[in-house]
Length: 193
Image 1 (cartoon, rainbow, N blue to C red):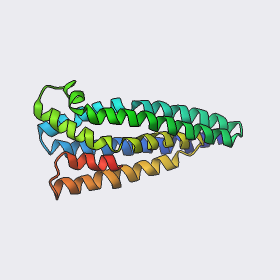
Image 2 (cartoon, helix red, strand yellow):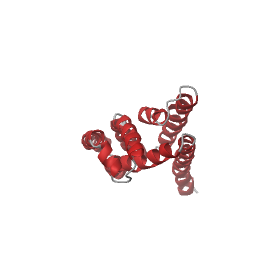
Image 3 (tube, rainbow, N blue to C red):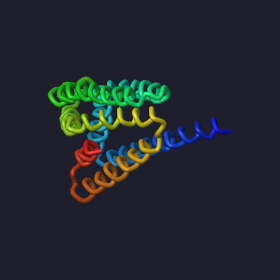
């Protein structure tokens, strides 16, 4: 009884967090599709290129979940805080390095995937926009792991919902439909999220 309830209390917010994220990604892709073939190609390839930049932070997120949960389970909250701080510190250091490289070498990174000049130029532009959001992304990903390590899966869900739908999608719709920002109208809110 109690074990099942605890498991569901942890799992359900995580499941909804993933649903919120994936459904939001579908809406964002739909917005990009409305901008034409070059924008869709640049958006998809820039997403792939950007994932190279932020993958190390997922490692720190998993590590922080594990180390924080072990420390909390052992009753050592100070050690949990130490692991949390170190995970964020190292994740941010790596992300600064990765984001700097992504900003500098955005056209070269895009040219690994495609030869079309228009797609490379547009993809490089949005990668450079996102480079400014990468440190926040590192902190958000690792903090989500820390919350989960303490047994709190609800806050990551709330943050994902607000970030995806209020910070990312609504402004993207406004920037694209009203102000005609094009693909940058998707990536500026993404960086802010």
